[in-house]
Image (cartoon, rainbow, N blue to C red; front, side, top):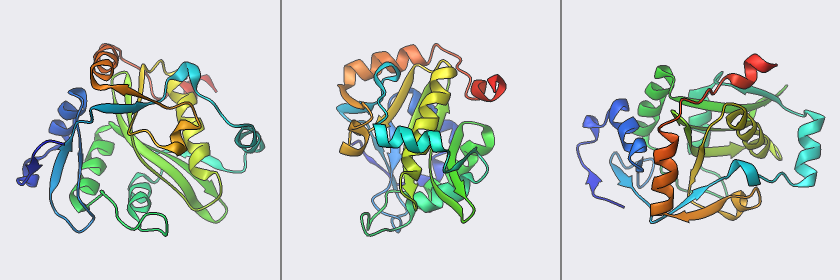
Length: 210
């Protein structure tokens, strides 16, 4: 982690994009902390497209189409639900300023949400930042079994068909490892990121193919 950004109001969506292109991303200590600090992990979580793995039970759930998967229809709500306290997560790094900044990135076309809906409403999803050939996953939430996992499966398919080069998960967790996520050292990540910045991928290619 680098120094705390005390002048948080000077952080702009444009600065955020430059930060992502340089391999760093912002976080806050908590929802109530107004500050933002920059993070540059020594080891980075990524999901390689060619080794992405969908567990059998989840693959069955995807085939059954239990959820109506939508893109960008409720971006701000997805962010708010990702920041919501749960029994498993009593603190969040998503504060008010981060909510505002990523909402602006979404308006600019650089941030997207993948959402799982049922007749009860929005029950799961994820959001992240898109920049050239890279997608930087930020957070996910689930109010129904497998909802966030189905959103991830849809995201990977979308990125793969759009010829993205890098899916950055920031950190490696057990939850992501079951899908084939791995951890790479900073120097390897920087090489992958540099290659991704040379590509103009298409986030909506899968929509035109259907």
